[in-house]
Length: 41
Image 1 (cartoon, rainbow, N blue to C red):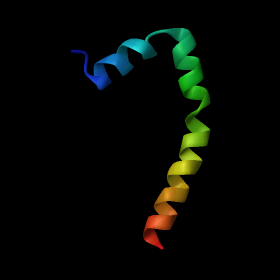
Image 2 (image 1 turned 30 degrees about the horizontal axis):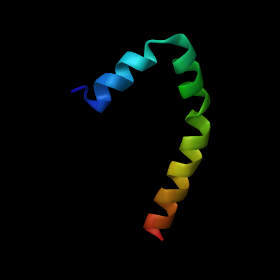
Image 3 (image 1 turned 180 degrees about the horizontal axis):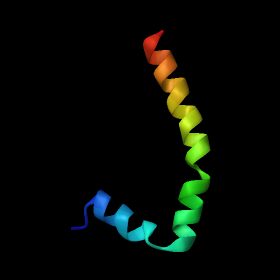
């Protein structure tokens, strides 16, 4: 069975997948900051 991390590593070697993954970085950074702020409140 393929582990999630192995699958992610394999998929991110593809330029099209990497580009989409990187494009989502800003959005997920914002979500992570909101979650962290709510947890600290």
